[in-house]
Amino acid sequence: MRARPSLLRELVERCETLRRRVASGGSAQARRQLEDATYTLCVVTGTCQLDTALYVARQQLADAMRHEQPLRH
Image (cartoon, rainbow, N blue to C red; front, side):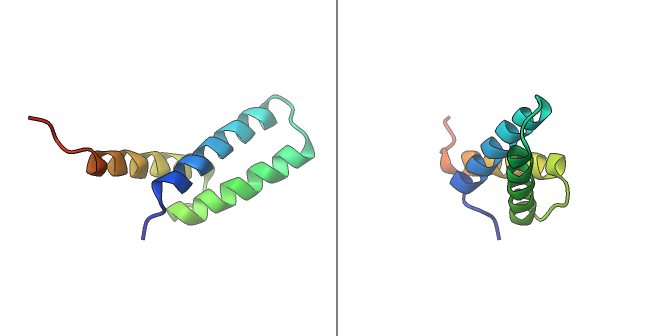
């Protein structure tokens, strides 16, 4: 089973934003939010690490885009 593309997009954006915030000296709250978002993205993608979860989510989003847009001849 796959997550809806809208949920994947939201989680990818949230994880990327929070990761940047934490990398630039973010607060403990930002770190907790990143942990929560990472956990959710990993569960949704069936992975164990953020980088892998982001990769899988992006692949699933690309697949969804290909299926939504009809091929042009």
